[in-house]
Length: 145
Image (tube, rainbow, N blue to C red; front, side, top):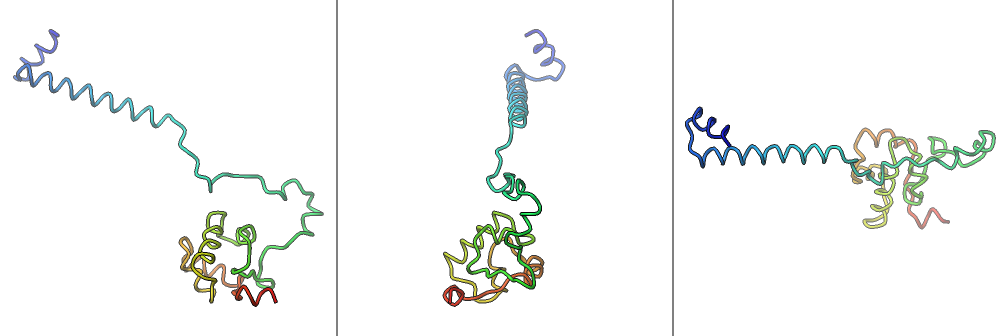
């Protein structure tokens, strides 16, 4: 502890002040070490960011084209009856957003107009303008007739 005495003399501080500075320095270094170790750990992966292979990845291209088509202006998708997988095929809509659409229509009420899609968190004017030609809104009971 001779170096602590020399530091006290050089800085003109008391023994208690020297010990306080030493304690703060040790705590600071300990905090840096903890922060470094936390950054070394692998961050948790969000469930909606997992990449899973699509079932169509293993299907030959000749058979894949005969399946259901993605929504288009000629065949718009009914937002009130579409399952999450079909909504996921829309541009700008991923698995998380398709689940939010399904949750909104089941907890709030079915959509009356396409513009009401903006009420779903994550769909703004830009996304809505992209979706507008590819979706339609029909009451769930009239869609089954």
